[in-house]
Amino acid sequence: MRFSFTSIVEFFQALNNAGISYLVLRNYENLLEPEMYLGGHGDIDLLCDDSQAIVHLIDAKPLTRDRRNLRGDGIHYSIEVDGHSVQLDLRQVGDGYYCRQWEKELLERRVKHDCFYVMSNEDYFYTLTYHAILQKRSLSEEYRSRLVEMARQLELAVDEPSEGGLLKLLESHMRTHGYRYSYSQDHMVPNRFNLVDEKLIDKDRGLQLRHLGFDFMVNTIEWLVKIKHIFTR
Image (cartoon, rainbow, N blue to C red; front, top):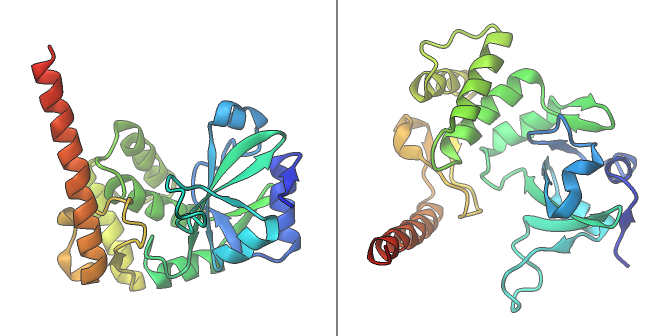
């Protein structure tokens, strides 16, 4: 029987009562507002030490585009909240979303916010910098401005308010704590490691090839779409 929560608060209470070690990765400021999830919009990104413990606890439904793989990819799920389907993305320690040591320490340093757990302000800044620059196709102006403001609030000196300046600050932090760049097991997550210090990359050849293959497919599709637009004008 699948759970149906009356509110997002009830969902987090279930995790808390079960003693699940988790935190919300980002964009948690309006997470408790029901309007966020109307019409299938809004999702919840979690980092945890055991994603399957959460799946089994709440009987989350796997999201899959392939009918032959009913168990999904082990990352993307949905839950029902007040009659609405809400997407739940589960990242866990050791999955390469961030390096294992960093993910482990993020959970150790988590803090309570309302009825759920989040990162410390410093952890949030550095992981969001990593996400906005390296796990996206490009750094948006919205993220850039947000990160510069977060750095100012933390009294961190940014050499220049640009992608390069933010990366320099991130890599200084990573060297201090022994963190590494790692290829995510989720090959759909971009890894723009051409921008970073190569010495900080954990080079998993198999995962690297999976990412390169997926990036090639995406770039090919984008190129074909552009060609189609040219010839259909």
